[in-house]
Length: 209
Image (cartoon, rainbow, N blue to C red; front, side):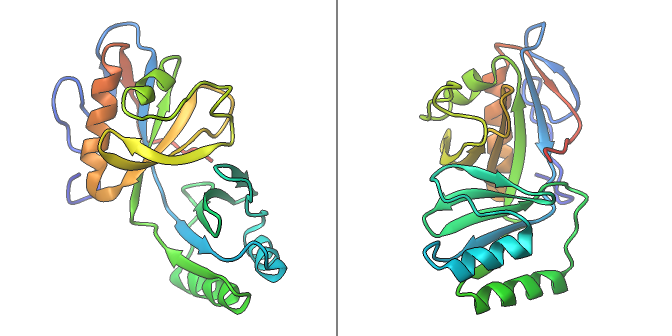
């Protein structure tokens, strides 16, 4: 990743430049997904006051079933653990000023929870198309069959040697793959090279709201 936060091109089969790569016609679409706000919410779901405050603050009920997600008008929440969730703005145009974060954090603290700003910690990629699940299966031990990895599911696993958080936002063959920012280059390269045999198109950054 370059100093301005954009992906650098690597070569003929793993470029970040919009265009078609690999065989034709393409069966996979790749894109970066801008992340404007990503907060880690922590708290005990057995405490009603914490759950109620989180719902009041963010307009959604935190998902309590492992590896599931929840969506509200402006936010989505991904289950990370029994007491941990990743809260993300549902639209990359949503910008929360630092004062807004402080107010949310203080309110959750008062309800027995905690809030941490992770907005700069991850980079997200969209993997979409008929062969999207096959591309991920090359690099990850999870089962991406639609009967096993349902719309609204998420899971923490690996993308090659990189820790990754993978979400399936809807019933289409579309996945969101989030990797640590320091491994963004490696993650993108892995996805591109795994997609080349199916043919893939790189498109401009997209919203997954």
